[in-house]
Length: 267
Image 1: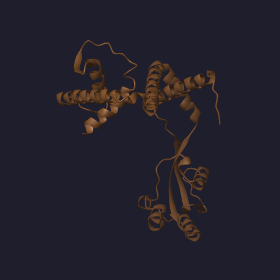
Image 2 (image 1 turned 30 degrees about the vertical axis):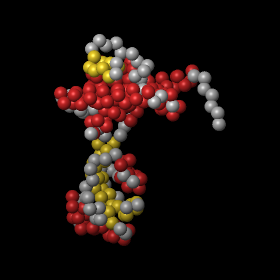
Image 3 (image 1 turned 90 degrees about the vertical axis):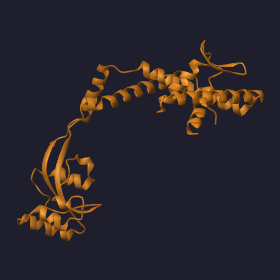
Image 4 (image 1 turned 30 degrees about the horizontal axis):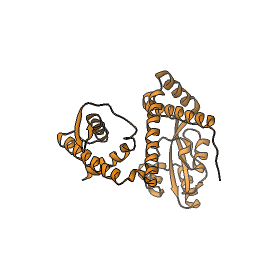
């Protein structure tokens, strides 16, 4: 039944253009009350369904033809009842036809605006340039609930106790306390502002000398290392760049068409 429901949904969409598109085809799959079901239309529907994951099997093709015959019988009955003259039906058919034409237009735009390698390389270079210099920081921290505890921990670290062992004993950050408070490499924007501001002010190997208050609690931060942030390779971004360039071309066309159109609105 699911196959039938999906097929009927496809038929409803394609049926909106059925009366406006003539298909020249001498191969006939079936005739229903004198109306031919062409092989061209049949294969078009096979392609539509298989592109959505439907296996192309003899059983599927047999079911598809059966559904097409049923659809034709129902369509003829709808015409006999003059439903095609009903204002609501006419409006729906016009809306569906409009959507199909828009889909066809966008497909044509995509095919015509496929960016070449040079354009994609240029877009990649611009992305990389626009990002500018960026750094990543490797840190560790101890997070506690109150300032007094944080101040005491700082004093103990300055006196020679291990940052890692104190993180294990006192930190309430359960994701890092058992690994010495160590955080992954990250850019400053990954952290809350109070933490990142303190972090970028430190030099390599330096620890914050006062507790840092954030929405999470009081932090003690040590900067382990700094490095230049990596940027994705061209191959990693190529598909995204292609889609962005096509979208840009589409949006520019839409803007140009709107700008050249005579548009009147009424409140």
